Length: 115
Length: 113
Image (tube, rainbow over the protein chains, first blue to last red):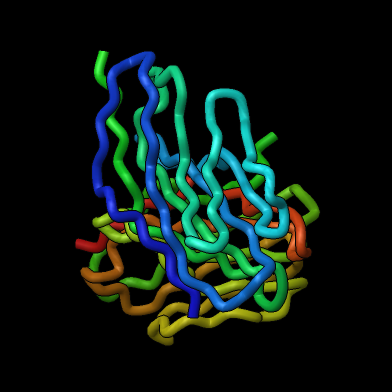
């Protein structure tokens, strides 16, 4: 069974600085997707970025980028030029590309942005 | 237009009652999910339907019964509510294909007193 681990329950970053959130996962599959979702206090789950496992190139979306290390089963999220609106819970998620398309989530990292 | 909408957003009820949460998606997706988020923010899948067919049924008490009248709707009915059922319940949908990410509703905060 696949598992997703986020070892940082909470992180803090100064406004305009850069922060990296860690995520590791375990799977025997070779083809899958990885995602980062953001959950602000409004509790809406918002997709931040996704990575396809068969793509070597790391995904980037504006200030958000990932460092995907397939062999190490690591998938970290880098937030550059942090803004107050980035404060939220961040969840790493794994999804298989076949079968039931079940999303497996990590336990989340609470990000605080300091003014 | 809201892509995935859940009603109600808040639900406070007494132990032993029966309640339902409704979910609708207008994205044309084939797969819909129910997730439960506990007080520690952990998200765990409960059920998933693909084209009205149940494809995931995790170890959920049988007091919880999903129903999908069509592929755009997935409702969750809970019988004999217990204090431990208090949580946020999220509905989500995805294309159900190799590509495509899940879109989530705003969640329903259920409080059992």
